[in-house]
Image (cartoon, rainbow, N blue to C red; front, side):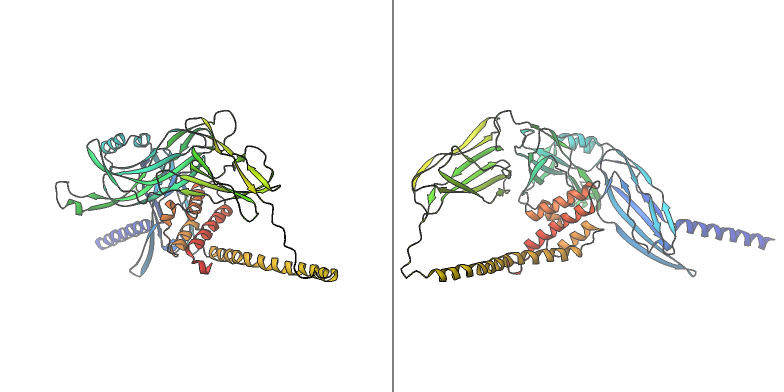
Length: 530
């Protein structure tokens, strides 16, 4: 009886251990915290076992959460008493978007043998952060230290808070750091739907040491944008977020070796939203631009009996991309053609200065003294006053177009002239076709190459695949976020579209990805190979 009881006890213990091991080996979806603040981060762990370990990574459903990047992955294989087991563990880092409820899951798993398992969703509470409601650096640092958080935060600073619609306002996102930052990168770029934006260069900005309430921190600009309001009203600049890794000391500040020991932790910081009041343009006559603008005109010049040429340049702190060409104050004695020039933007300073150029071709109706009327354009100054930009009138002698000199040889007969006239058309057509092919062939070849490269990018995992393609061509995708260039604008437009998540169609995302590929090919290919 004693041996029988012992066998039953051993059998029961073996069953308990077996079922416990089976329960531990079950697939699961977990998070490291159920309550977090708005600037905190969350670790999501998905454990896949046995039949689900070799399955494809499922799409992680999220609500009010944004992933900080691709998951980290680890796999294991065990062989115990003739039984094998496999396990795959995926870990994501995510951060909340707004102070509200958040959800992770449910996750539907498909195993090798047709097995299907659904992991239930997890609810998370996102608490509001008082530091996100403060705009004074001293107050923000005091709040972080009072709540036991790391002294690192982000603020958006504007050179002016109230402007006219269309007037330039410069917004700079500044990182205040009182910790040991290992690295950081931009996470969420704000959507600037109500503004025309021009990225400014901050790569040469040097960090500064500032004293905030007795604590010395480092102040460094990480992004600067010149914004031009597209409408009037209270316009909100959405928060900019960063992901960083900081070193937390394991010993006290009195230990001289404490700075070399610690643990690296991830932090997520977001700037408070910034409101800019855009006043409507005062009623009155229409204006071409709003801001500090100057206009210069060259002296009218005629060469070899051709048209009279006048070069006009407008420059200043204003949005001149859609400005209308200046107009003549009165009608000229002839015809006018306006040739659009190149628009340039100076982004190297603390503001954006645009320069717009036009070339006026004036064809006088007769020879003699020709009057070039004044050129005028109306602008609105930052003080709210209308001002007329004006180039004064000029008078110069002009000649008509030179006539063909008479032929010194005998004129050909009428039949010969007719044959020559008839032969001109085929030659002209052939020349036009050759010119068209010469101009169109490089464009066609470039379009084929863009399509070929685009086919190598995975549409299902668009952004990581595109980043890998860009990096393979020697371009850092993180630098494109802040690069003031056409390819930087195309990359930021794609990122903004993908960040919308709602309303962004695959066709539109593919079209913007094609723009990025075209700009990268254009700038990374030597001119001899284009």
